[in-house]
Amino acid sequence: SNASAGGASGLDVYKGYIDDISNTIKKHPESKVVMVVEPDTLGNLVTGSSEACKNVHTLHKNALSYAVNVFGAMDNVSVYLDAAHGMWLGGVTDKVAAVIKEILDNAPNGKIRGLSTNVSNYQPVYSEYEYHEKLAASLSAIGVDDIHFIVDTGRNGVDVTETFSKYQTWCNFVGTGFGAHPKGNPDASMPLLDAYMWLKTPGEADGSAVGDRADPV
Image 1: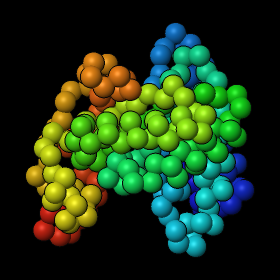
Image 2: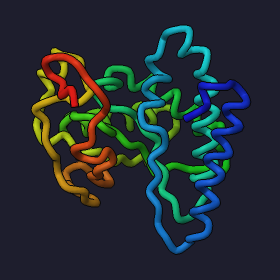
Image 3: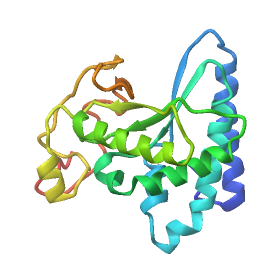
Image 4: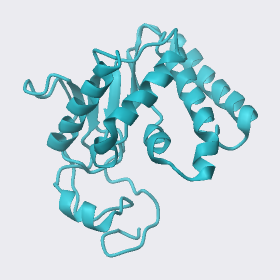
């Protein structure tokens, strides 16, 4: 988003961007839309501790609230606020829940179906679902209930948890593979999970990269 670039003026630009998308959706009321809102922004709000990050936290929260308020008020849109992934935020779900609640409280006209996780990442479904359960419990404890999840499976077909932890690189991580194909209600043993989805285009590069575990492209 442009919200970090120009203070209040940047937020106005962002709101215009959201309005343009919503106006386009309104022209097609018969179409059902799944909206994933701002991958990784929530993660940066929770863990970004530099002064530069802190200086734009309020701006980013306001931007997310605006998007939820607009899209979440549309009958044909199911909104999923992105919640990064469990390896990043699984140890701080109470903090994640508090930020989500703040965003939702400032979006009185909007509602979300739930949260998306693992967008553009490599975490296996089983560990993401553990994160889903833990985060849902943290949210329920502060009054945010009936939250569902979707998980990006486009590049998590190989469990690289150990090597990922060791190298701490995400850009063009080698040794990965396509995960489960997109599917609604994919596993009856995971009732919080609405769908597997390929949100990051499988095979698409993240950019240029260096290191033993990265494809330089």
